[in-house]
Image 1 (cartoon, rainbow, N blue to C red):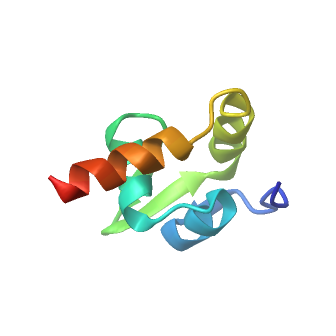
Image 2 (image 1 turned 90 degrees about the vertical axis):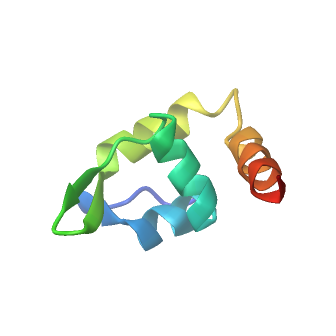
Image 3 (image 1 turned 120 degrees about the vertical axis):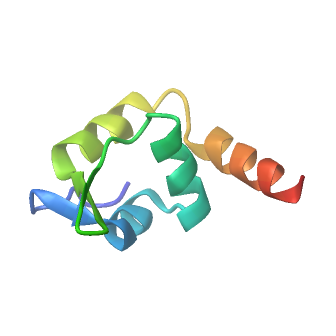
Length: 76
C-alpha cells in the first residue's frame, strides 16, 4: 500500500500515483462520485483525507473493477 499523503490537498497526478490509476480511470471514479474533488481555476484538487477514506473503503472491493469498466467503455 502506498504511503499516506502528508499534505491536505492533492493534484490529479498525485492521486493517480497514490492509487495507481490512469487519468481515464480517475475521471470515471470522479464521474461516478467515488472520488470527491474541487475544481478551482481549471485545476482539480482532492482532499487527502477523502482519498484515504476511498482507500479504506476499497479494501474489500478493489478499484480494479473501475479500471476494467473504464477500459471497456473506451473500446466501444
